[in-house]
Amino acid sequence: MAEREVVFRVHRYRPESDRGPTYQDYRVPIRDDTVVLDALNHIKDTLDPTLTFRWSCRMGICGSCGMNVNGTPVLTCGVFVKDLRGGVVTVDPMANFPVLKDLVVEFDDFMRKLQGVKPFLIRKEDAPLSAGEYRQTPEQVEAYRQQSMCINCMLCYSACPVYSRTDHFLGPAASAIAYRYIKDSRDEGADERLGRISTKTGIWECTFVGECSVVCPKDVDPAAAIQSLKVLASMRHMRRILMPKSASR
Ligand code: SF4
Ligand code: FES
Image (tube, rainbow, N blue to C red):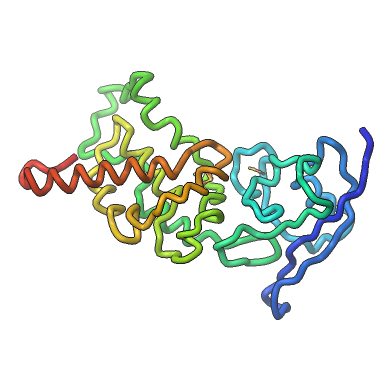
């Protein structure tokens, strides 16, 4: 396959020594099958071993290689350089997160929000092992399958204009994951989760811009999940007003 050279303009920042971020240009040989992550690895392996970025699986599964490429949040292992427009490819860390070094961001805030929605099955009382598995019909699985595809890549937070304004916002992925468990027929924590996320900084902060769903590489559609959560939270609220004693789910 023929090779050509493409200039990569890469965000550099070493907080321990730099006064602020800068850009560094690298000329990288590109083939038709070169993805952006390959180009970054070429830079690190042959041009500049100090360049720092995260990646693991190289196949769109681990969610660790997210960066802003030409201003758009993407998984760098899934974007062919030949498909990018313009002569120079600009690579930045994901927006809206503190930068630890070069292209690596800190995601403690997201992890806290994820923990807050209890991303696991909640049971009021576990059945004994002898009762066997919690079986589900294909329809019951389909109710949460889309949101269960989330790989925690955080591209949706990088694209979200509300999160860029206020990092108190629960945000797209944590909301979608809350919805995933609420819709699971084996789960009994819907009331508790809805109580936690039906707040000003929770689902009601979302203005339905929808950029989160545009950039999501797994078609999770967090924007739609948040709107569905608003409906469920409103129904819960009405139930608690009309039937205060029986309000649960
Ligand atoms: S919802 Fe999509 S973009 Fe957001 S973390 Fe999950 S997979 Fe990534
Ligand atoms: S390296 Fe795992 S998703 Fe890109």
